[in-house]
Structures are given as structure tokens and as C-alpha cells.
Length: 451
Image (cartoon, rainbow, N blue to C red; front, side, top):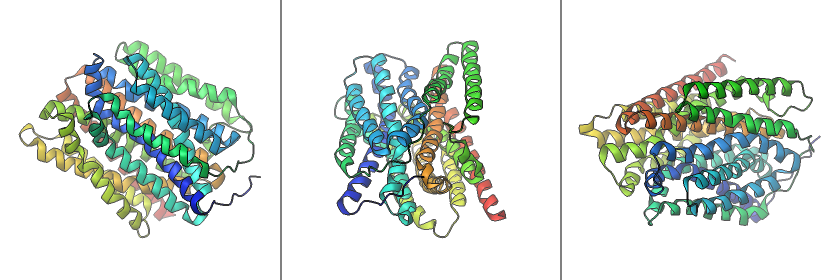
């Protein structure tokens, strides 16, 4: 039986919370701030925009592949040690990315960053659960959700400000600084270890090898539909064999038991759909503003600033609403508002692009602020306390699966059609994904009412 940990007090408690939130902020900032630098990176390294988009795909693909394996490693060897090692790998890889001389090395370092970020995202909430009292865990989820929401939306603006220092290499400075803060404050993290669980090394390696196949398949599809389909079929077949093997094990690697909760399952599906919309929109938006309006990086950042401001103002208000409105209903409303904002961006006429774009961006920020906190709260509270790391792995996998899907769609669109047309199609697809998220969340609310 796992022992019950006593939450640290005073300065250690504050340092532990600061370490988790700073590391989470670093990982999310890195994932979102590089979007604004993609046009500059493409020009500086003399590559096509569709190839530059793989800097996002490589990072997010490594994150998806690493989340569940690192959650399992954390449950075996301890949350704190795995979290600190991942934070250190992330920070060092960010420094290496800033100095990369070629697109190939930059993609490799981005993969290493993604592995480090996977450790942070898989174990961050589990460490928060050990740091705060059980009755405060709901608030801790809110702090984490606010951090993710703000940095996801503010990343492009922060990236543009760093880019304005003179080179795309400065974009990684914010992530390096935050990772350093996380490592310094990590002394306050609780060192409690769960009951030692057997480590399925074969399962970890198989999963980490199979998941990237789906990303590779989408990339190959741009060159050869047949080759991409073959790799995709191989990935699906391999994953099916892996799941059958895992189900028969006494200690399965995949946290499939968590999906016995309909509320947990619907929250995961809603998160995937919402972050598909978010990932697609945030990657395509800088290209759209540059191409359609001819904006510089600084002007693009100013144009996108209402998004993080709307998230910042909406998220605390959402946390207060959770005491009176069921989380699933708030998720549905937030996803619907996000969909309306994306639809406005898709339909923006050239003659009135600026006011329509600003209105759409504001609606996107409000919608995302309404969705993120209640979705995370529903997901984590539906999981047992001793499966917090597994729930964190699933939550991160859902988020990154959506973002990778969005990034792949953007890359494919940018490779087959001009930027202007690609942007309109991308925003339309993103709006449909957000509408789907609203529908899934609403079904969660109806199920709660019927019960």
C-alpha cells in the first residue's frame, strides 16, 4: 500500500509550488512561443515554411511519446527525481536549440526538449497533489490550468518580444530562464515515493517507438500517400498488438482503468478536440497575419496580445464560476465561444481583416479561458489519488495529441496551398474541432444531470 505523504509547510511548500509551475510554464512557453519565430527561422536557415513547422511537430511528438513512459518511470523511481532530471534535460536542450547551426540539429534538440518537457507535464500535477493538502488540490489544479492557459496564449507575444532582440535564437531565452527557476526551487519538492511498481521496460520502449509512427506517417503523406498510409497502418497494428499484450499483464503499462470513468473519458476527448483547434490556430495565425496583412513580428505580437489578455481575465472568473456551475457546462460554453472566434477568423474579409481578426482573437481567448480549468479539474478529480501521475500523463497526452494533430494539419495545408488559402481552411477546420469539443463536453453535462 502507498504511504500517505504529509504536505510540506512554509517556504518549502511555496518553493515546491514555484518549481512545478515554473517548469510547466517553461514547457508550455517553449511549445507556443516558437510559432511566432517560424517565418524568421525558415528565412534564416533557408528552408520552406512547411519544413519549419516540423520544429513544432518534433517537440510535440516527443512530448506525446514520452508522457506515459515518464509517468511510469516516475511511479517507479520517484516523482521528484524524474521531474528534476526532465527539467534539467529540457533546459540544456533549450540552450542547444538556441545555438543550433542547421535545421536538422535544431529538430534533434527540439526532440530532446520534448522528452524533458514530457517529464515535467507528466509529474507536475502529481507533485502538486503531494505538496498541498487534499482539500486544496482543486485550487492547485486551477493554478496549473491557469499557467498552461496563460502561457499557451501568451507564448506568441512573448516570442515576438524576444525575437525583436535581433535573432530567432533569443526565443529560447524565456524557457531557459524558467527552467533554471524550477531547478533552483526544486529543493522544496516532496521526496515521497509511491509503492515500488514493476517497470515494464519493453512496454515503455514499444510505446515510445509506436507513437511517433503516427507523426511520421502524416509527414510522409506529403511526399507519398501510399508510403504514409503504410506507416500509419503499421503504427495502428503495432499499437493494437501492444494494447492486447498490456491488458493481459498483472501490472499494465497503459492507464486504461482510468477510462472506466465516463466523465474522465469524455474530458479527455473534449481536451483532444479543443487542443487540436488551438494548436492549428496558433501555428497558422502568425503566417496569416504576415501574409494577409503584411505585419512584422512585433506588429503580429501586438495583434495577438488580446488572446492572452482575454485568457488572463477569464481564467480567475472561471475558477469562481466552478462553485456554482457544473464544470462540463463551463467547458461546453468555453469551447463554443472558441469555435465562434475561430469561425470569425476563417471568414474574415480582406477589406475588414483587422477588426474581424481582433474580435476573433478575443473570442478565442475568452473561450479557452472558460474551457481549460474546468476540463482539467474534471479529469484529475475523476482519477484516484494514487494514479495522479498516470492521470497527468493522460491529460498531457490528450493536450499534446491535439496540438500535434493541429500542427500536422497546418503543415500539410501550408505545403499544398498558398498561405492565404491555407489560413482560411485551417481556421475553418479548427472551428469544427472546437464545436466537437463543445458537443462532447455538453454530453458530459447531460450525463451528470441524468445521474
